Image (cartoon, rainbow, N blue to C red; front, side, top):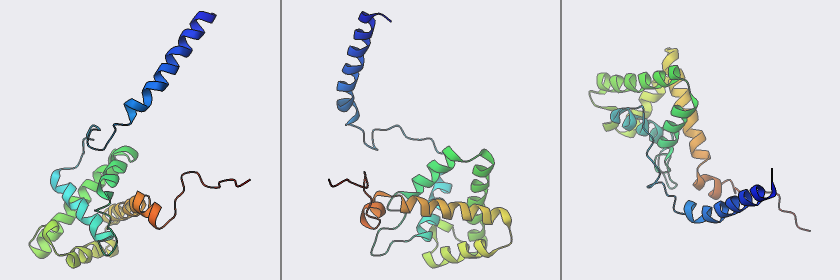
Length: 167
């Protein structure tokens, strides 16, 4: 490599680094491109209600208010195979049909106590696919909740760079 080319490349890289902060500081969740969900709108509502039933609101924020349904959707879309995604979709539809058959109402419209009872019947049931579905959603809900900024900073005392050296 010649000296002029090296200097030219260094100048371009330095200019890029100087422009980066002004370009990157405007990022917000609103201006990032929306991720195309593979769930139907009803499936998204049912998933949100499952997440809310697992970790409901109390004197502290629940999983739904911390954005855990979006986390679960993203994890399912990015990290799991098509077969597992189809199992989750099927589980959401079976849950909705069980709510219709048992309570003659949509899962989304049920009171929280009935939602939790229906989820417990799936957890204790004998259908392996439904148990797998519920266990996966439950684990992703807990993972998303415990990794949220609120829980990390309020309860787990998260430090960006732990182990500061005091000389």
